[in-house]
Length: 313
Image 1 (cartoon, rainbow, N blue to C red):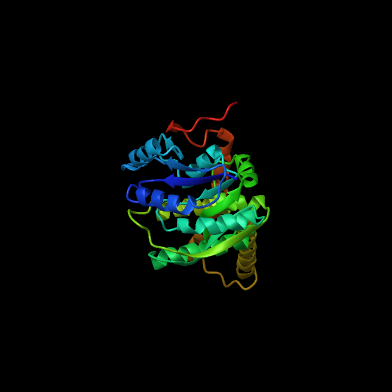
Image 2: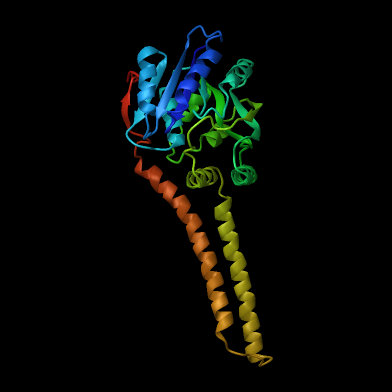
C-alpha cells in the first residue's frame, strides 16, 4: 500500500511548516512499502503559501503541489488532489491543524481492517463561536433529515478513503461539489473515529459565512429534492387558502351583505401570494443554476503550475 495525503491550501503560510513536520512525524513510522506523497493544492493564496510549498517540494521529492490560476474553492481543490493522487489509500486533511495529523494511523488501521471509508467525527469543536457551532449543528441535522442518503453528522472532509472510492469520485462530474455527500452516496463499508477538534493553529479561516452558506446550498440541492416539494406543497396550500377566502368573500357579498370594501385585505393577499411565489421561484432558480453549470461543462479548475507528471493518455 502507498498513501496520498491531500491538503487544500488557502492563505496558510503560518501553518504549512508545522503541518509538514507533524505529518512526517506521524507517517514516517508507518509501514508503507510503496511510500507516501503529500499533495498540496494552492487555491489562489495571496500570501507566501505557494513559495513555502515549492521550497518543501525542492528538498523533499514526496511533496507534490498543484497551483491554481485563481481561487476555485475548497471542494474543487480537494477534487484536484483526488484527480492526481496515486495512493491506494488517500487522506484528506485541512492545513489549519484543527484536524490532528496524529489521527491518521487510527484511520489507516480501520481502513486496513476492511473498510473503504473512515471519517473523523468531532466530539467537540474548540475555538469556534457559539453561532458557528449552532449553524453547523443545525445544518448537518437538517441535511440528514431531508436527504435520501445517510450523511454522517458532525464530520468534515477529514477522512481516509480507498482507491475504490477515489475512482468512483472521479466518475462524478458535477460542478457544485459536496464531497462528503458524494462519498456517502457511493456507499461501501464506512466507519468513523471520534476526536476533539482543536483551535486553529494560526491565520484566519477562509471559510466565511457566505462560503458556508454556498456549501450548504450545494449539499442540499445535490442530494435532496425536498425544497422543490416544499415549494409545490406551499403552492397548493396557498391556493387552498385563496379558494377559502374567495368563498368567504362571495358569501359576505351576496348572502349576509356584510361586505366592507377595503385595501387591507387586498394588500395582505397580494403580499402573501407574491412572497410565496418568489420563494418558490428562488428555490427553482437554485436548481436551474446548478443544472446550467453542469450543461456548460467548463473544467472544474485551471492549473497554473505543478510538479506532478500528468498520467499517460
